[in-house]
Image 1 (cartoon, rainbow, N blue to C red):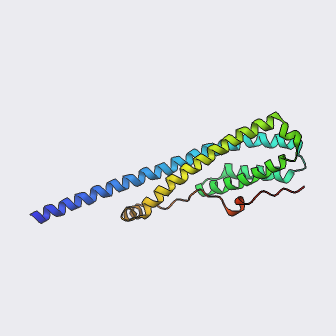
Image 2 (image 1 turned 135 degrees about the horizontal axis):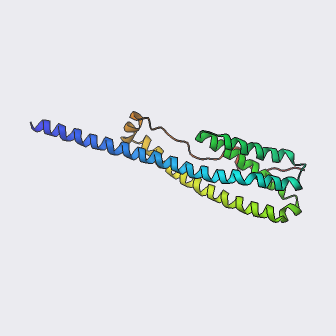
Image 3 (image 1 turned 90 degrees about the vertical axis):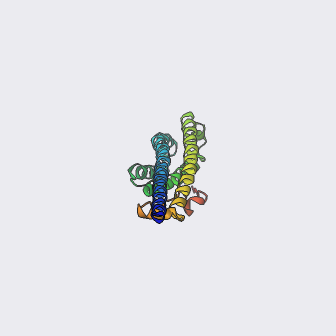
Length: 183
């Protein structure tokens, strides 16, 4: 009788732990999705600013066609990306293309003094700061989620219910290099 009660008590404790761990993993997974959704909102703001920026630069630097096309193409990839990984990759491409665009703008004093361009640049800078903050938050949430899914004993529950590792938001090696602009 006592052994039965002890076993029942252990089963209840393990069951409660299982439910608590599962609920924590669900909560953390939802936090990761919310964190990426925040990045997505800021990326949308950035995508909306880019056509105005490209049009402003186009009037001053029409012979910089390849740079303008790279920005436009990267924006298109970002708008059409469906998965988290695709959105991260598209964002990385767009960030590089925007760096090139601003490097080109440095060569045109009239453009740098244009109030539309300056306003768009300030708006984009604010959005970039917001994106950077959202990326930091996303990576912190992902780190905690990944730790929870990989450490014992919660890794047992994670594998039972298919909670898998999620990617961190990191830049690739190409983006770490300085932008090279040649005329």
